[in-house]
Image 1 (cartoon, rainbow, N blue to C red):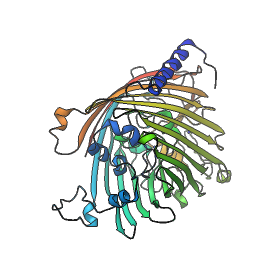
Image 2 (image 1 turned 120 degrees about the vertical axis):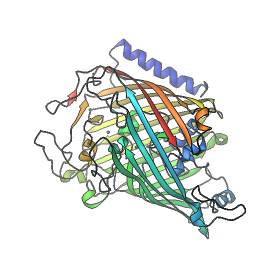
Image 3 (image 1 turned 180 degrees about the vertical axis):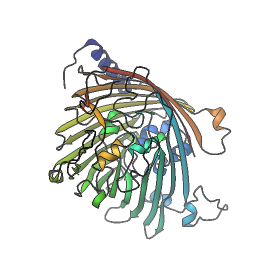
Image 4 (image 1 turned 45 degrees about the horizontal axis):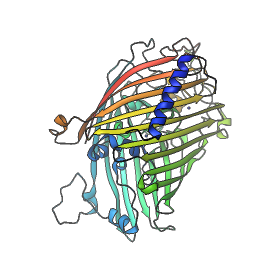
Length: 498
């Protein structure tokens, strides 16, 4: 939230990552963020090969599995006509009423990350999969939604209501919205509550507006389990892109293939007033290009800007931990997030994506940035191979932070003292290989949805000689450099979505 390699093993790691990226680019066989703006490049573009459409929509975020943006006005009008949702059975030949379009979805995910070499009980630099060698119920996500549907004269209205329970909810709080109501490993959090409106204004294809609480629209890996290709996250998705925002977001459809994105919000995982961090506005600015090169290429470039520090006074706990408050100077110290992502569909079975992210934080006096390459190959309709390689740099060690207690992140966001530990300035490398297995012998017998199992193997490594892994810090010395310079671990999750 550049340094030269110092050993031969680091060089081998980089060479392996570069080879993976080269294979992707030369056509060898092959997402805090799901976006509700349908025209943007989103994690669904990477994850579509992971699951059938029914399971994708069942992830609790109906827009993950939506159809590609309409290419003509007649198709847009057709897409906005009333349709029956999964909560009602409409008689054949009967045009559904608006409320018969309601949809309800649930997804349940549990998993484990095995790391036999850890001495801290943690997988360093991870949010959701931080607990090593522990089976966890990661998330139960339930949603009630309605797709944007015509209400006449070119206008359309829809909405999404969604909440999460599980160990992942520790890292999905929105301060002022039930945050801190539970304190153990398993917590709950509202994750989406927004009104969606289509306005036939200004541009030929109109404007889509969302108002309320939304997932962040940057990055390549989403919050729901099936909105990302792996159980574990890359560094950028955990530490750079916003998880949740409360505000207003507009997507203006400039042409068939180009959208302009503007938004104003309260900041990452905060709301307003006493639940805000400094009550100064933040917001998005971006462009998205969709279905280029005969529909094979999608690109977006999105930034999020504004003061993100907490303007409360610094508080020290009896045990010596301090809060994140830095006083009134937080009102003017900016944070800049940037995300550029390109997804190329090589054919119906293979997809390659490259995602570059950047963060500058005036209050931390830190820069963090990285590039991640994804490769996906549908071996069979029920089996997908996925690969991910990432290089990530934290210039001062202030962004990559392990929130070591159940409530550390919530306490940090709400200006309470919080336990943590971090690393020295480090260049991280990460390579992850895994499969998404949708067993036919199980799914054919399920009355609802689909079942997915995702085993993976992952190697994280410090590429500049630091030793941040497999060891914990203390309140006297929270910066770790007495651990290991790499972390080899194995993970697997199972998800039922309907």
